[in-house]
Image (cartoon, rainbow, N blue to C red; front, side, top):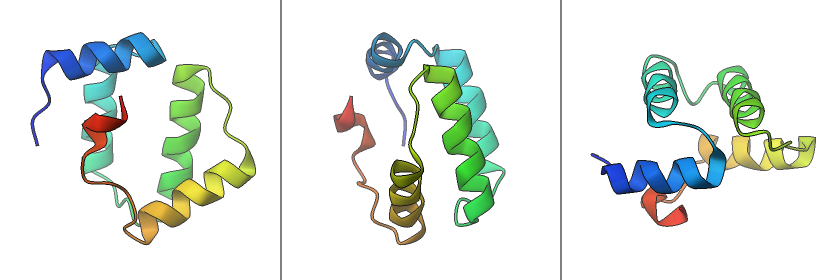
Length: 80
């Protein structure tokens, strides 16, 4: 799935994370197993730090469960 510059601009405005950083994280995600709970938790913490938005243990657990159980929406670009 390709994302437009418009998508990256929206994400950057909302998160203060630039396109280059997003693409580097995406590459790292592609190289790792997203069904691995430890990998997911590392990614969540990394995103939390990058965006300056804390993630509670409860939120982290919900995110991990959603990803592992394939309950993540296909249209991620609509979230921004």
